[in-house]
Length: 459
Image (tube, rainbow, N blue to C red; front, side, top):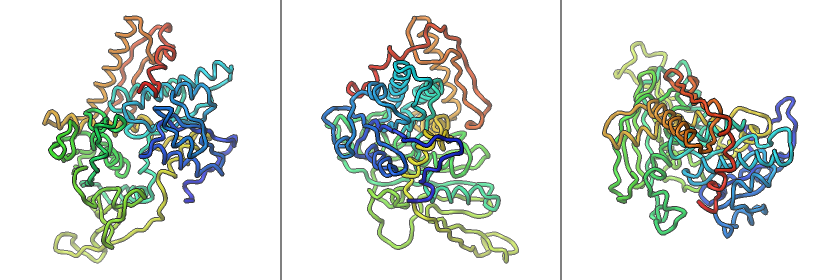
């Protein structure tokens, strides 16, 4: 196992068994989280149970020999859990997180325990299907003292870590521009409208390659460069399948220091130019013909440029008196030791649960990537530039307005007494945006009023 995937115990931490549940242990994503947990069992990690939509879906439970639940609240109420992985369809992330936290809180109260055992929740990317739900998810977790790790697992890639070191080095920039490509062909069965478990992929607001795939590339743009996207302009097309969601598109972004970037994407064209096919970290995908590593990203700096994931960089040598197009470029190549990003991410998540390690991608960090892809979709709809920060402000204001309306109607809701939506300056490039509304203490406990809405059996 790669060194970075080991579970180091922090000084003063109490080593014990770390019990983690997986909600949504399906074949595309969830089952791989189960595998990653099982790989860590010799280091004191236990896959405690799984939660599925239907009681007949016993594949994961039988394969790993664990109990099967169909209600996330009942699971968290019955099981003593340190962490939970949410790998359901995106639109179920918030209700599942709320249900798990409510169940863990009620378990603590029923057993008269001094503190809640549930410490962290790993939520698959994107954090939610829209910014309003994502803000509610983050606030709910913060109120309960539960850390959120958003599953942008590519951040743990050895290729990505090395690219980040190179691009942010003083001998690279300033960054002038970025080009990214994502193109592959998804089979027709992936979009089957006859299967209710996959129909959501064709529905606007929950499916489409921008929300499902491009958010990975957007997140890596932010992570590798260390810059935030301040404006986007996008065109999309759905002509390949004529679904309500896009299949192809082009995006221009402006970064906070003035650099620009482009994304070209399609899930309807066969090609080797995507993160999946160029890194070959996911064994699901077959190798691409040819000996030379293909690149899906290009980072253009003032002093040198970099291809990813080949990690080949180009610059003018020290013997060049006047750098420019009349002088020859030199090439430098860097290699890394391959490791499984999903496994490294899970080891990190366990440390977050056991030792209080800070999440690599917090809920508020994941919000920013979601804001960018939301801006992309909005720009494509309006044919105009969109600022992600404005969308975050509008989502926060809408949530506060809704909360105030619910208070006046006497409806219970899961917002803290000082309902302050904080968009901190360590994540967002503009000044901190704060809005608050004071709620009476009579409306604080909403667990009992909302728990059944989060039952997987009703999803």
